[in-house]
Image 1 (spheres, rainbow, N blue to C red):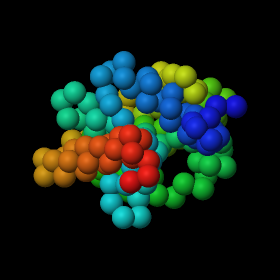
Image 2: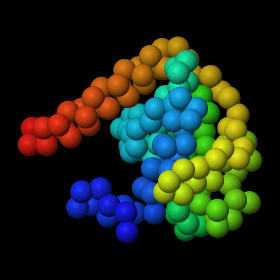
Image 3: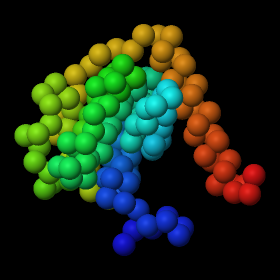
Image 4: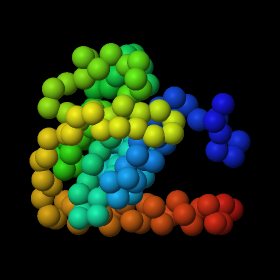
Length: 147
């Protein structure tokens, strides 16, 4: 069983880890469980070398996908949107016009590129700052966990 410290990783977290590893090959850095606005939490938010922002929702099962009612609200927070699932997931359930990544705990592959819908410059600027601050806060908490 995969763990981080004392925490056992859940199937969706394992998918997210593999997605983040794969995105590095595109020179994208990523952050997991990111909140772009109150009431929304994306599984993976990725930032590309030219400021591109991708959202990737990780679905570990059919039930997990069927219970997701908020995904369309994430479209306004990214340039491209993807689903990440494992090789056994019934991909015919996934909506047309979205990207697809097949992944496991150790890597992944983009099967279908999500269509591009460019973010407004003002929203992009706010998101990039928010991602940077969130990542810095997480790094700080790793270096000084009692803070």
